[in-house]
Image (cartoon, rainbow, N blue to C red; front, side, top):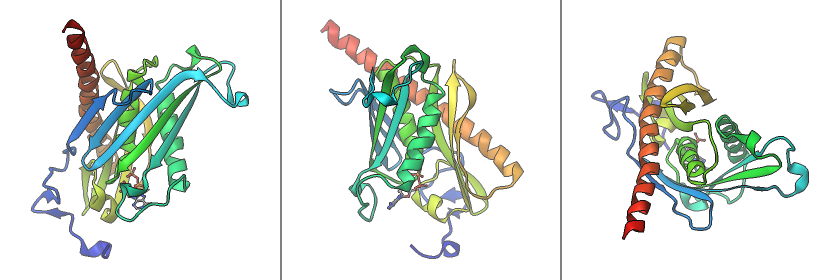
Length: 248
Ligand code: ADP
């Protein structure tokens, strides 16, 4: 790619893909896409395409990993070699280990682990196509897949990033904005009873001022609430279709 200073990301007050600063990329969510998983979700967020399979609560192997008082949540973020422009070497790397860790910690805020001592809840995440914000897309899908698996939860996780590009804050950055921008901040919120309860994930790459940070949090919260509504709709629509099929 060319020099960061040569690329203009905002032209005539619009982003390169025509979005307003506070606009999300189009989102598609499909629940229960995998027959053999206890819960699953396919999600698109712009050009990101991800699929999540949830297994559990189930017995943990090897046994020494069991926790006698609560369930163990495991999260594996994996990027397919064909998910990015230049083939990615298969298997885990530093980045995927980091994303898996922070994402697991975000989900641990909502899963009612105390109900399932000695058991494990496994969240397998496959990125089929990546275009920045893949960790946020995966968390949104994982949260829906956990609901689909019937795992008792205190609420939902809804996740979106905010970036600073050409001096402006923008919601849900795509690849060029992430790559050439001045800062990238992925957020995930714990949402309970249709309200944001707390921040479950916050990372920062780059620099912003204190005022920009406060504005970014507000922007991310608004975006996450819109995503949350779509997650809820997707879950509901699965059960509407299923109950209609039963009648036929
Ligand atoms: P996120 O996808 O959560 O924004 P990053 O900021 O680390 O995570 O990555 C931004 C984007 O960079 C990814 O979505 C992907 O499009 C691209 N990318 C990440 N890792 C690789 C890689 N190993 N090879 C090529 N592109 C990559």
